[in-house]
Length: 136
Image (cartoon, rainbow, N blue to C red; front, top):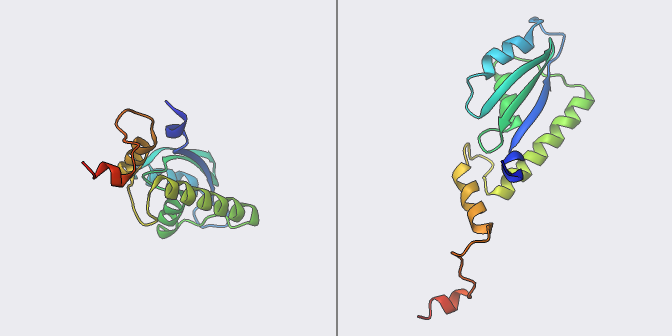
């Protein structure tokens, strides 16, 4: 597998608040996230944290976190986790924008492959300026 495809697979840790009525939020979150499209694997690290493996072209960490919060899960909001989440959200949005994915576009796989094909060095590209190509 090449490096460009590997960089689109993400592995992130999501920590939960321990002051929640459900002491086993991690197990409940794993059960909820296993059937979500774009998520490859979810593992419990300990009773207050999970590890999520997902494909960036299909879903982002911000999307996963909003799904969890909508279902009533409480994420850990200590400063360290807030800074990590903000950095991950920014880097993933930037990476998706560089691939040609719009912010609200749920699945941009086709655009990623089109952009990759355009940038690849192959024999199907015409190096002449546009006005020369239309001349004949």
